[in-house]
Image (tube, rainbow, N blue to C red; front, side, top):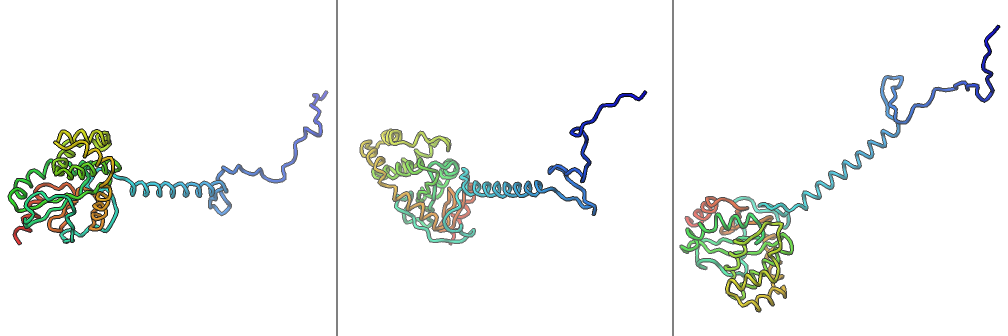
Length: 265
């Protein structure tokens, strides 16, 4: 006697396959020619990846241009930097000269009071330069603002200008470098703290505070920055020795060689 079989209804009867099952879009298929081809989603993936690669490249380029590292070359602006050894005509600006105004060699420094490399130059090179060349009447030294490290730099530059009203420019110049905090710390550069410093340096505090609050010397600071850009300054410190640029906080020997070369002419 035959074993009973499960009765199959029309609904449960399997359908006959009329064509191979279509592979998932995520599959990678080998063609009869032996060449592999990707499904449409892979093409879309490539396009998306290319888009994001281009986007990331653009962002990196933009960030590199916008970056302001605390180094010798910090801002790519203005005219092209003069070639090494090339003399350019640099105006000494409006601030008082340090040294004999009739000295044979003129040094003009573009700097920011908040720039750590400018502070390094002030600490490691300036004392020896002053002793060997400025005090001996061989070099006259001028300072010009290149205040680009933000609003605090402009406050510091204005403080020096306000001190200049009272004949204390170089006193404030030295104070700002001797007390320079880290570049990220801008707490020192306020009217109250700068006025307190001015009082310690023997200035009339009411006059100084009114001067600093008025921002009356913003124009001078801006004009110095523009003047630096026009002669190829792209970072701080940038120092010109009889019109020849020395870029950055170079060792004393570099300045000595440049000065001696000019003195020998």
